[in-house]
Image (cartoon, rainbow, N blue to C red; front, side, top):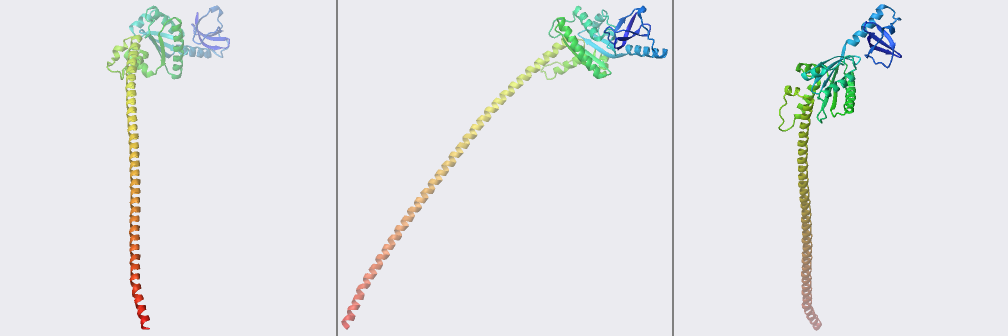
Length: 344
């Protein structure tokens, strides 16, 4: 008989058995949601339940919790597969989303298996069928959708880390990418008949082609049918071209910057020369002005000297005239005096 672990309490585990009864067994490092085998003769039915109603309530609650879908996980390589997972992280069902996925799911037996282990088992099958090879463009895309976004993100981180470690452990180079998606994205993907992971990847391709010169318009329907490896290769090529174009623009910008710097330097030199020339002209004008001022001063001094000489000459002439007048007057006075003396 089989049972499902619905609760763990210290050394005991509560198990929902096939007959619908909740039983307690010894906990052997069980996990909630794990399927365990039980022997009928060793069953330990709950005897401490307050009533049959209480037992039935616990049984019903446990059964409902285990069987209710809580999370949807999709996996894409080229085969696209979707897992329905319960609140305990156990796979309730698995289905193919495309034709290649049918080949894989027909060989999978992962019901009631923890989702992390189910993904690893699936990878082994993909590898056996040649879908995962040692290629630099190989990739595994996982998406998680749940009503609780926080839990979806936590599961995405967990699956990405554990799956990448496993891929490297088995010697493959595929890059694992896991992310949480919303309900709207899941519904949109289902309308297109693909997984949310494939839809996200093709949209990344569309974005990578923006700004790439000569890039063809992306046909969504065409690329949704291609493998993850093909889409990854196209994305890398677009990004490579965009990076090269960006580097070319940067080089042209650097050249323009250099030319501008040289022009600015030439302009600075010309401005400096102009300033020096203006200073020289100003100095020349100042010297000329000072020279003219000195010349004017000299001429003024010479004029003053000439005037002084003329005044001096005029003064001498006046003195000479005075002396002549005095001399002329002197004989006349002597004659008069002689006349006076003679009369006397």
